[in-house]
Length: 409
Ligand code: AMP
Ligand code: MG
Image (cartoon, rainbow, N blue to C red; front, side):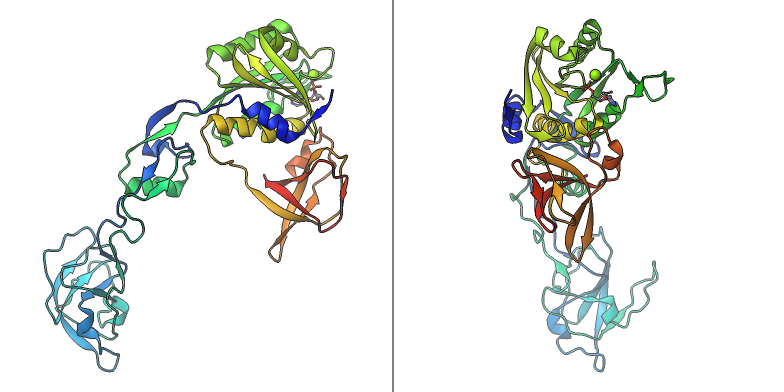
């Protein structure tokens, strides 16, 4: 069988995924959700307001003010944040004003309290009847004008944007109590293998613990998906079929299994998917994770990852994450990328290689060193890593200081 390039395999696979339906949720439940509506701005701030605690004045009145010849103004109003001032200043007058409070009519600048004789900064202190101003201000100084941050009608968040805390803040400012988002895609996850037992079960001779369920569930949730756990299934056709049918009943959007899809005598997952749908078995030109099964089980896309935990992890990053993100309606990947320099030479076998590495910053450049031996069963070198280095296909060795792309973990 010929080897498919990673890019070609991704393209073939991603052609089968389109965004799931949308739902409308209260804003507080929208963290991490992907926007399904475009968000347009209103004027922000919504009214002219003070950016400091101080005194609203007419700039012309204090043009010549200085520490040695202060200008004294009569304080005719006290405007806390949240107030709606009715006063209009006349020449020679000032109003005490707090940060965020609306500018009274007549005022065209704010003098900071630090530039006046009103040093009474204790909370609750009453406004003085007059104030000495020690410093001139420009017209408009310390005033945040209506629409200064963003103008009504400007597009601020696009469809496909995954909402972060600051985005929720701006949606709150806009009064968006309910937001249209994509629902979380449901990923049914199966660990196959007669050798597997769960973390809390006794460990008979010859058995190992199921690490992949924990790795792949966590990756799924981090990528915005919901996990339908199918647990561990033994290497028996009927058992596998029953679990996959459960996932169909639970309306999974994607089925993911680890192990059982290569050419071992007990690799039945492959066979079961084939009888209930169709299966392409690809050998992808990558390391680790060369064997990749992709198909449809009763109409639902199925991805069969290799069993070795590191291969399963890398297979998730390269194939499952983009599929999930496409299902989730995301326009951009959630895995941050960075260009780094090698702190040591690396060898590869010419396949597109994903090497476990530690990135360290020195004077503004990130340098990468391998985090341990790169066997696909060695999960510890992935634990010690904070990045995957991507060595392109066709490259067999790279010298120290060569530049490569890396994915932050
Ligand atoms: P397979 O793809 O079935 O040939 O499995 C490859 C290797 O991965 C074998 O050593 C398996 O025991 C191991 N393996 C399979 N599934 C898991 C799992 N869920 N957790 C940890 N190791 C696994
Ligand atoms: Mg096996």
